Length: 337
Image (cartoon, rainbow, N blue to C red; front, top):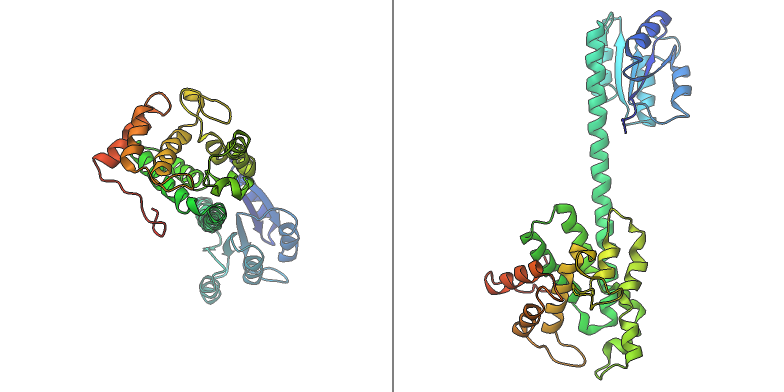
């Protein structure tokens, strides 16, 4: 899909000059024109912001500096060029110093000079837009971090035995994913999915989670619903962020013996296969209401026994290598990454 043309507004009381500018740039830009500042402000008001404004300095009524200054207040991202036939250096310096003007061009301006100035203005507008978008993304990321931390704390507050579990699973999952050369985008998706993989447990009665005895089948069936509940909570994040899919599948197993849908092999998301291994390792190393910690060696023996059967082979291999050869240790809750 082609990019829309940059929108350029020429403002000049010389109708012949406006016609010349339209002819020169109509194929390259979306060209608009006005013969005075008042008419230009009317054109600016209803539509999307213009990319570039090119204004004459000397016009009846509001002059070019006043017009561009007002336009800057209304549309600060629009790039502004001042064009004049008068050698009024003081006005030009004032306009540039006050930040109203990106370029100052003298009339008569050669077509190639105006063409170059417009191209530079459009490029400058793109840089401003990118900077603003980057700032917005950073703000969104900080907001998302707060939401993720809040949800994670909510789950763990209902089950003291889960304290730190999601953070530790995320740390191990990311360590595995980095070894397997996951992309930066996939790492970020995986980190959030791992931190929230048990979010569906907010649906499970706290008594089921904290009971020291053996659960009845119907009670365990309720607990087994938590991946589907987690999916329901986060499914609106969209296809580009498959966090909900990963959460839904983190208890699936390569041989189809997992839940909630009995998926197998390649039908299981690659991120969910890593979380499945990390989840088992941390769960076996942690204390639970119904048993004490089984220790890291028992956990590694479990995934080694299920390698290529219940658990993805490459996920198991990289996990074993992290612990046995590279000295990986689960981090503290205060510093999980």
